[in-house]
Image (cartoon, rainbow over all chains, first blue to last red; front, side):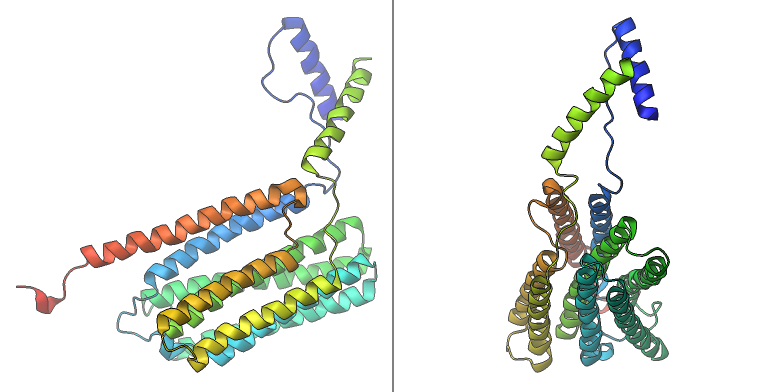
Length: 216
Length: 133
């Protein structure tokens, strides 16, 4: 409404002084949340650039062991495979939650969302177990450039998963309180994109960091 | 009067705009079949590289590295299509445009950093003390 009056006055001023207008005067209204999906996608793409920089840093520094432990000494591939399984399972269970959401069935949706959160928590638990194990062996981020870049890259991904789980708990509470409103559905779809995006980043991590590291 | 004429004026470009950019095209519809296809494909595409590295099935390390990187790239595309529901027409093509731009930036960042730093390493690192005169 404000834009309409401002626009009208601008149009009057323009006609009175015959001055050219160099901006869009008729701001049309968007439906609420109409551009959220695209906006969130743009956020994910910018997040992608953050990870690209961290991957590049790891690619450059990944071979600088400073006479310290190398990936071969540290990485436990069966554990990484288990971790990958957890994240992959959480992706498909989130998919099931979205399917229930489309059918407007609240309880099954909440159940699948909770299962997704548990798989996410299992992933985090295994990752923290791996990190503590490494740190107790003396492979701390301070030990070498390889370990600094490793902990930064994998830790940033873990931090994203942590925030994803917090978001998931928030949405479980939201849906329980207000039901599957349009706004909540929109939020669930945004978290869906976020969660699947984290899985995509993890593909890069286990290929580039763990598998290539052991291969090196 | 002026407001009245303005509103009628404002509605016309809005509908035209929606036609062009497809803002109000609603949420992408997910199907059980789509998710299961994506899941089965990603399980296969995850198992193969782990098996390749853990069993050492390929004798050459370079061949193994190329294989797991290629499979990783394929798996990323699978996730994009089946889990993130990427289609060339979603949001009127703007998600795809943003993705293409990001991929270009990621490729420049990765190859650029690795290339420059590799040459810096080989050409400018101090020599081994034993090689000094």
